[in-house]
Each structure stands twice: as structure tokens, then as C-alpha cells.
Length: 123
Image (cartoon, rainbow, N blue to C red; front, side, top):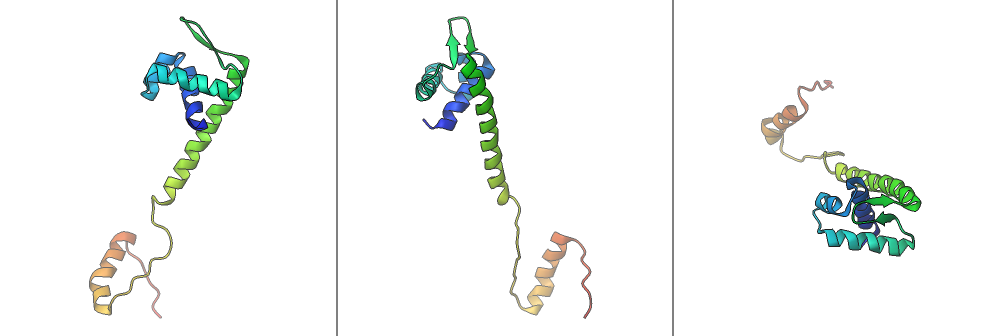
């Protein structure tokens, strides 16, 4: 599993205050969530959560990792949104080649509808 996915699973478990709640939030099975958190802890070489049958609590390292992971996930989401927004609106110069008659009958109507009334200086 990639690092960002593991971070997301860990953050969901912490925010849901349990593996079952984190699994529901992510639409994953509880064993898959447990394996993901275990894989993250193994990758980092540190225990992030203290678990019992009644509760899940963060360790000191888990608290620090949670804060950083939450910030990193927000930055990744922001980067995705920025890239997706690039193509949301057309940008740049549009060049239309048409005969004068076609331009006057059809193209200018579309331009006026898109831009609204525009005053061009008379040369």
C-alpha cells in the first residue's frame, strides 16, 4: 500500500476512535484497516496506537504522526484540486477562422452571447 493511503487509514481510525468506525468511514473491512495500521507501524518502526478491546489511544509518536499526516493529506487534496481546477475553465486565446458572412451570421452571435455586449472601437 502506498504511504498516503496508510496515512489516510490511520487518520480515519484516530478520528473515529476505533478500527470499526474508521473502517466504516473508509468503506473498508475492519481487518483491512487493522492490517493497514499494522503495516504503517511496521514501516515506521514505532507503535502509533495502544489498543485494547475497549479503546484505541494514540501514543506520543502517534499524536505527532497524526498531526503531520492530517496536514500532508490536506496538502495532497489541495494539490489535486489545484490541478483539476486548471481544466475547469477554458483559458488562453481562441482563434476562429471563418468567412465574413459566416462570422457575422453565426460566430458573432456566439461571441455576444458568451461575452455579453461588447463595444469595439471603430478604426
